[in-house]
Image (cartoon, rainbow, N blue to C red; front, side, top):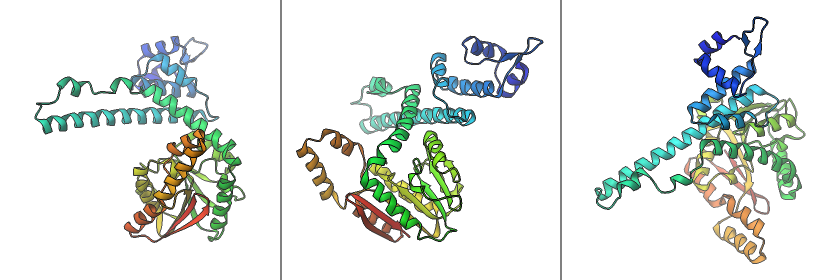
Length: 341
């Protein structure tokens, strides 16, 4: 594509294209007539640059983003970067909106008598907030580390492996034509031993995780979306919605949304199957924490405090309040299964 076409289709000026080329962000080839010819890769890079520039990224930061380890599919990589950058900007704007609403409500409450206006203009903690660039880098690195963690360490967790086998046994009891949706499928360890005859869709919010999962189950259909934010009306319903070892990574006050959306993705006569690290009640959870403290196992204690283990009695109460039936059953120590129907 020549310069004129690129400028027209992407609404960019020739001057800016020269700047991007000078900064070595793009490298169009020269034709025999010395005109520039932009490849699909160049066009994707220009699109990324424009989105990130609009979000306030410097050219140096953009150069670092473009140098991230790519997936084998440059198109997915390009769109994923833009999606995550916009998501980070939305989070930043929502935080700014919350701060302003908080300041307004505080001024209304005190009629402005006890509030320093400068504190409303310059909220505390603002200087410590991450930039969109840093948030993106952290998210990218976390996604890659999560893939590595699943591939390496979970395969050494005997309780996890036994629970996966238990879930596989439950899945095999369903008819062959069961349409299944795996929420937060990870690297698809659950689907080892299954094949193309399985009517499986996998939903995950991490592109690196999805690409790793596609290597394990290339026959499945994949969707990138967030169980906490998705619109259930966008998707067909499924006979069986599954979630294994995903819920305890979601903050406790958001687990209700996740469960509601799982139910919303299941057909009226469908089922939801959740297997996750859980505690029967808060007394059992407190006992576990006390035991780790007494053992002095700081690493295990840090992991314990970083997760949001569901409480069985709370999950049961929630599901029944939604008008659905639920069966909770122990799978391994501190691992429970929930069948919602």
